[in-house]
Image 1 (cartoon, rainbow over the protein chains, first blue to last red):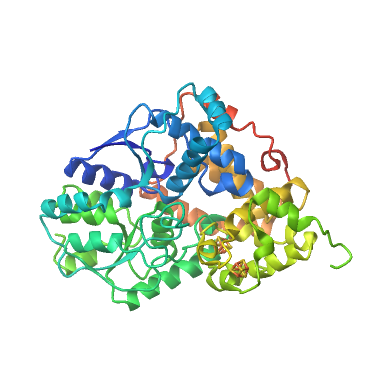
Image 2: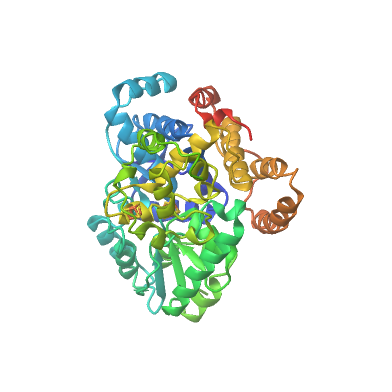
Length: 280
Length: 191
Ligand code: SF4
Ligand code: SF4
């Protein structure tokens, strides 16, 4: 399976564990991620906060650039995913605007493929079967609170691949790894997102509440699908480690060099993984 | 309030955001689910009511419109399918266009972020954070308050090799800069 890959700005920096584990896991599953050539930042939450038009134009360039690769566009970051999705929709619906974007980029939009989030792709039935076949070290005994965050599954009219209030696809994926997905009621609650720098006290409040709820539900770790969620949980609270769901996949696949990723965490996941006998 | 009512305001908001603000019947579901409502001077449902009443100054001058983090909880739950997040985006642009002062730290962050993309094509955290701090310089209290916690966070991230010193640069920056020519108030106005 081949995808046009839109990594996003954080994947080599603050979310480097997400990027490395995504590459390793996809390679192990025979999924080919072809990086979009010369991609630019999608504007994250800043473009739509100040300039709606810019928030569609920035990701539109990436969508147009992705056309020649073929296949769906995959993004690991939920904010990138949302922005790329909104741009793709406008490219489909607004012909005059599409021509304008094509002219800037100097390439044609063919409308092949759709933007998708990495979790959506990795939790499809065929992917799940491949995951089960690839597991070498089942995460038996590990209790995971699957944390979807805010914009991964919302708004449902636009995303539509999981329930907006009680999503389950990450839980199913965690079960495929042999882990136990715990029930908790903060799956889609917001961590405070970009306020982490401008109003950090709000993010401390929200992240702490999330972490305490996960601990109360009996979880050993939180599984995250977003670089902002993960870094907010990793730096703004100390109760529980937050791992990317792809790191847990890499652990279950017994892939090498995981220590290099785990030691980058602010809340070190290694002690609890050792206690569960999953990490040397 | 009252004397300053602008009866065309609700219509303007509806037009700019595409959201049917008149449909709101004040059920408060949005406020109940909003993660940042506790820190807002005007809660989401209150904001809708003020819009309906034409209280333009109270709406565009609120700090609440800068605190919405676009989490989409409200929109997914509103019985009248009002997507408040899109409405907040439109309100911020209207506020900038009409010269209302934005929440300083939130505005400074978004502005620095967008400047970073314009400069490199991708965000470069280190220089972006430096610009952000510079923008808040004339306000010492906020500056020192945030600086200490952010530098501690930033210091930790640099030690873990998560913040790079060298920016990643898009090759065809010309294209990105052309995308910035939108003539929106958000790219023009400095507070
Ligand atoms: S949920 Fe919708 S109808 Fe209810 S108060 Fe909020 S905006 Fe109005
Ligand atoms: S989108 Fe904004 S207003 Fe709506 S719940 Fe989230 S933070 Fe609150």
